[in-house]
Every structure is written in C-alpha cells, then in structure tokens.
Length: 241
Image (cartoon, rainbow, N blue to C red; front, side):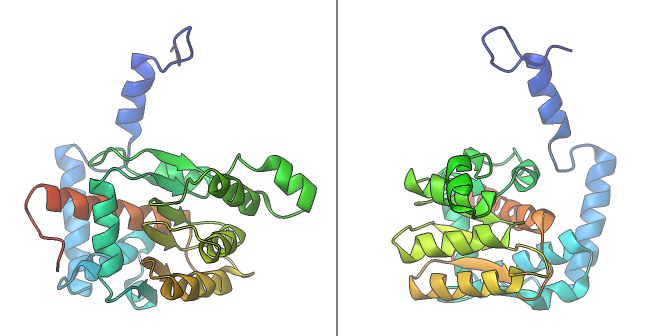
C-alpha cells in the first residue's frame, strides 16, 4: 500500500489503517468484552469519586486488583488531578509523552489534543553531557515551552521524570503530570520526587509507589482523563465530583 503522498502527507489508506489500529473497542463483540472486563474491575474498585476511576483503570491496565492501593494523587484532594487533566483535554492542551510506546498507547478518539513524544529530541545535549536521551529530550522540549499547560505523561524513563521535576522547580507549569516510570533503579525515587515537587508547586499529579509501572499504565491513565473529559462533554458527569 502507499503510505504517503508525494508531498509527504499521509495517504487515505494510512489514515484508515491508523483508525483501524487505534486502541479501544468498536465492534459489538469487542464492546461486550470491554464492558464485561470493566464490570469485573468495578466489583473490585469502588466508583465513588473521579480518583476511583483512575484507580479502576490502573487495575484494568495491570490486571492486578491490588494496584489500586499503589496509586497516589497530588492535589487538594485525590480527584483534583483527574478534574484538571480532563479540563486540559477539553481545552485541547497538548499531551507530551516520554517515549514512542506511551504515545502509541494514547487513544485517538474523544479528544483533539495534539500528542507528541519527547524522545528523539535533545540528541546533542545527551552527547555533550552524557545524560540519558530521555532526560535530554525532556530538557530540550522544555526549552521550547512544550510542557507548560500540557498533560505531561511519563511511563518508561525514571530519568525523564527526574528531569521534568527539575524543570518544574525552575518554573515549568504542566496542567497535570502522569508519571509511572518502571524499574529497579530510580523508578520509585523519581516518582517520589515528582510528588514532592508537584505538591510544592501546586501541580496536580498522578503517580504510584513501588517499582512497578510502565508505558501501558501511563497511557491507560492518560486515556482515562480523556474518557472523563468525554463524559463531561456529553453531560454524563460534572467535573466537581
């Protein structure tokens, strides 16, 4: 098939494929599976607040009912990051991920937010300083103001989360931060630092404790912000729960 036109733009076939490959159920059978799955999750996680929706999504994304107890919310109350994130979606603010895998997991439906990844930027800075590519990419994007007012989503790289925390200390102001980097080295510490810095500067954040996390979880939690925004847009809820 032809992937692009002569001027470099996407072909109709490529756009159709991307729509087909986008995450989320669309057929009757897929909808039945998705609804049954969430029904089972809701038997395990109460659905009293907007924060509970994110807790449920964490269980759904990990397949682990205990993960709901690992989620942490920075704000005036646990639901503030969800409210703020949903409002950012409604305002069509950018979603900035750390790596390609997280970007690929962000649904293309229910929002008009531009979605971009940090990785791929900052190559010269990484070469000059020896810092990781993901940390350098965050710093490079921050120089261009990419994170101000954005939904900042980090699912893979602890050094990206640490770099973002440094940027926030120096004045960067994302609308909301979703940070679930995974691993045995610096992952838990990076999320703790994100929580501390976001709390100090009144930036809502969604994180978790422990070594676990990852790209799929970060994308899933960000998608839940999109789903909350869609429900608010459709009048199914008010962003004050």
